[in-house]
Picture 1: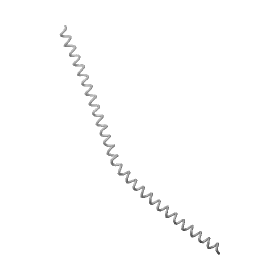
Picture 2: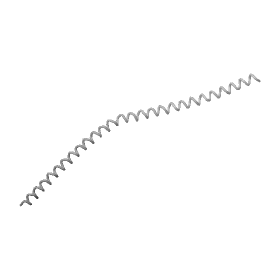
Picture 3: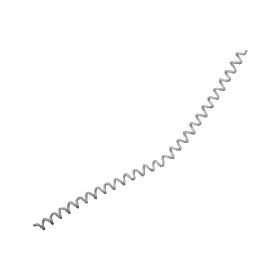
Picture 4: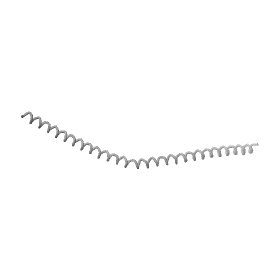
Amino acid sequence: MLSQVVELLLRSLGRVLLCVSLSERNATTLNFAVELDLRHGSVQDLEHPLDKAIEAEEFLRNDHDVMRKKHELSSERLRSEILDLKAELLQSSEGLFA
């Protein structure tokens, strides 16, 4: 008789422990879900500034490329003008000494 009572109590205790374990797991799962939602929101909050920064960087890179090409063309034009002026000076100096 006593062993039956002990066995019944052990079964009941097992059920209680199982319920507690399931309840703890559900609470942990809920906590993870809330944490995941918070982190997902944080990621979304960071995506917008990141997209704007990437867009600004692309604009600046394009602007830099345009300015670099303009600089190269101006430098080339000025070198050509310098060579023309040197040639002109050389011709005029040859005329003075001839």
